[in-house]
Image (tube, rainbow, N blue to C red):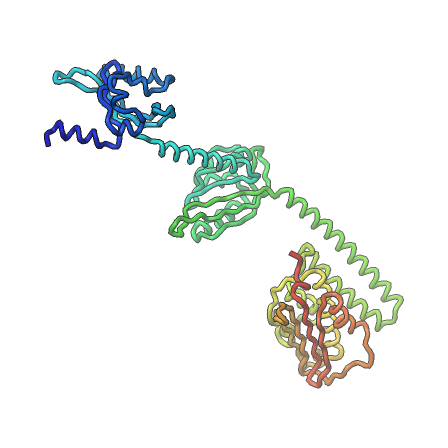
Length: 447
């Protein structure tokens, strides 16, 4: 193949438009790709000014191009738009070089243009996506940030800068430590580094300094974002201002503490009145029950009245015989189950009554006696239930009382009415036993 034929074949089969024009902008050649991209045939364009495919607002661009070509300069790759025959604009990436004759004189220009419609569309989509992300990130109520896989933070939303009064240069990497309270920063760094190292979600609460120099409390979380191989690619974090919530909770705690203090004072007054006006046996029993109620109240107040763990509840009601725990009294099973305040009161008073009776008449009235207490979650009739078993061993021979009193109400009737529980108890020769079975939903805190 001759060089001219080979060159012509390259132009003919190129995917890019290849066009030549003279120094006045008159088209001299127009390859098939130019026709495919712009819709104009070679017959339409050869001998016609290139301005025919250039939008009116870009005519000055063509003047500058011809000026550079006449000077013998190459116009490097740039993006522009040209008119399709159907009137729409086609985005192109264009490179223009001078064409010289045998004597080296510039006689025209050669243009290579590629259709970048798909690239421009993708770029627009990315820009739109970034715009939406920034709109979302800058309008959420939280301070937000993004870190690399190693935990180095490289982006913050506008709320972060507005609150802290800082810049990205000041905050980049680990610069965020400068706005943390010095009493908390080392703890925060240590905990967050564990998450960076392990890829486990991070959560913490600490104060951050505002632009005004004052500190506010924030609940902070960071979630790892994984790549296609399951490795941490980025971390996305937020800081939620919880200052007002903490202040409200502190106010509630103070009020509940005051209420608890006044209620205990009332219980003390009632105890004093009972001691002075009732017979000794009755007053002693009632005072002990009031004390049990007071222990329940103290425990619940210390937990903001959200309930308590069953193991802690039972131990608190065995305070009078706490020295026997682990030796003559064993407590086993699911001790970490959370109970509602109502369940704490009902079960707590029952345990107090059982412990009192065991001390007076049952296993703990003899040095050889012992008590086994177990807590478990069992399934009955397709329903999860809490089961508490109290077994006394090695004590004196026992028998059912001649009459039922207030103690029986506490261990039997009260749990049935309050918790919908089933209660079994008996007085075999081996020792007293008591078993409570209550629906789990009736004893757990409300969700």
